[in-house]
Length: 119
Image (cartoon, rainbow, N blue to C red; front, side, top):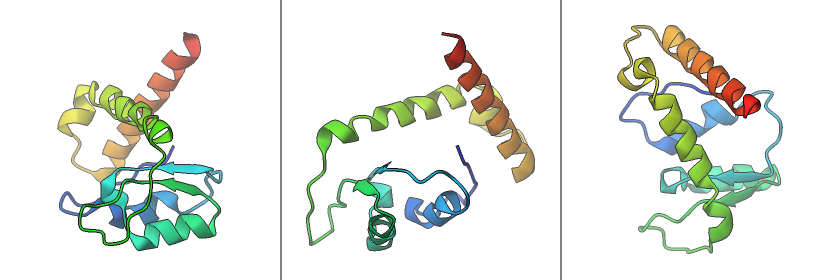
């Protein structure tokens, strides 16, 4: 898992490069919401042979179909964010620096992962 911080007014697709850079394993599918719908994201994923499952923005002229059964798996990602926000320190962002906030997100993620392994 990789996390990074962008300014609050930044669109989702502008933070895409921060998260997809680096040495992560190559994904086979990208599940994203309408906030990530851009030609750049779609072309980048197509060049990497990754299936993009992103609903179209309402303003988009050229429409493309979305694999709805696959898109429903995005609920798992949303529930992970919900579980991360159960940690009060993550939900309210008490930390003053980005490093300490991201560190606590990592700690909370590890805690969730260990809890998942024990069940």
